[in-house]
Structure formats: C-alpha cells, structure tokens
Image 1 (cartoon, rainbow, N blue to C red):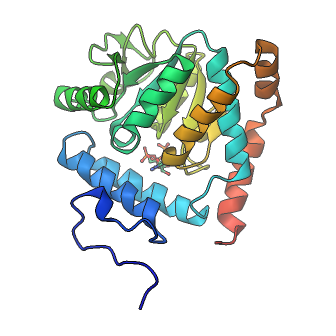
Image 2 (image 1 turned 60 degrees about the vertical axis):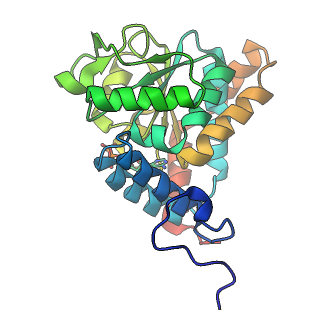
Length: 260
Ligand code: ATP
C-alpha cells in the first residue's frame, strides 16, 4: 500500500490531486496546462515546453536552489528600481500563475502585457479575460502596434506603451530569438526558465533558473521585503549579482545534484 492516495486517471478539478503526493506540484502544473489548452489560453506547443521544464525541474529536485533565490531577490530589487517595468505573459504563464503575475505587477507597479509566440486574436482575448478574472485591471498587448527590430513580423509585435517602451522586462519561458532581440533593444531582461542552457536565460541580465510557479511568488515576497529599501541598497543588490555564477550553479545542480 502506498503512503499517499493515488491520482485519478482523469483529473477534472485540481483539488482531486492529493496534496501529499510526492509529485504534487508537477501534477498540478500538468493539469493547469491541460486546462489552459482546453480553454484556448495555451497553445499545444505549450505542452511540449511544459514537458521540457518538468524534466529539468525533476533534476533540480523540484525546489528553489540558493542561486535561484538570490536571482529572485535581485529581480525584485531591479523591478523596484525600474522606471517602466513590464511583465510579459504567454500561454503557459497565463495558465500556471495568472493571479501571482497580477499580484507581482501590483507590488512593483508594473504593467502586464500579453506576448505570444503563436499569436491569434482569440488566444489574446481569452488570456486577457483570464487575467481580468484574476484581478488584472489593465492588460496590454491586445493592440500591438510597435515592432521589435530584427524579428519576423508575428513575433515582433509588442505594445507601444508596454514592452516597447519598458526599461525592465520580466519574460518567463521566453523564446530565445525574442529574448536576444529584446536584449539588443537595451532592455534589462529578467528571464525565468528551468533550462540554464536555453538561449533566453543565457542572454538575460538576471536569469532565474526555477519553476515559474515558485519563482513569481518568491520575487513578490522579496519585493515586499525590499519595499522600504532606498535606491542605494537596491543598486548594491543588483551590482552584487553574478549572472554567470547563477547559470553555472544551476547547471551544476542539474548535472551533479542528488535527488533529495
Ligand atoms: P530556446 O530558448 O533556446 O528557444 P527552447 O526551444 O527549449 O529554447 P521553448 O520550447 O521556447 O525553448 O520553451 C520551453 C522552455 O521553457 C524550456 O527551456 C523549459 O525548460 C522552460 N519551462 C517550461 N515550463 C517551465 C516552468 N513551469 N517554469 C520555468 N521554465 C519552464
């Protein structure tokens, strides 16, 4: 007899997943992505992305490693220093952490912008409604009239008043080409990605190698803690961060870590 309940073959509601199951978080993640696809929020490709992320997370021990925690604190400091921070939302992020993204945007006074790899008006509208259902008051990206230079037409579309004008962008699970093109525009990029070898974290100013489900609430918590810090202290936190070290620590944890 196992020590925890078994998972039903078909999970209709998230609360059918037993919280004491050793793969609880992974099962919840899969369920949310499946729901996202059913509800027209997540593209089928998002399932592949999730599968890749899940494998890396397994090897990381499904925990926030110390270097990722440091990156999350640095991200919070960088967002508090920003003049115009924007949080980018794609189909996986909308399915996994809609309320958490809205909360982070409130705490650091950032805008939310829908930014899709496979862009259709239907998906954009479904995501905007989903974010509003989770408390978002302003959602950018529905009218994307500006263009990121050096990217193909569809992937280049951004909101003139959002990502295009932003100084700091949070791009979770971003496509490598777009991450590179945003960097070339001079944006300070905070990337959340479980694969430290993927191009997006490789080009990020602040790569966070952690599951977006853990990373976003952690950044929010750090932003609350740092809310009264002066700019000098925030700048010191950003200056002390070593992005190469963060990537190497994550790769080491994946290659040679032991599963707890
Ligand atoms: P590149 O960035 O070089 O284009 P890729 O083709 O592997 O790499 P995508 O398929 O666009 O990237 O996106 C999947 C990425 O998202 C993977 O690197 C995967 O590890 C990451 N990922 C998937 N789910 C999560 C999650 N829940 N939290 C954080 N990262 C995730």
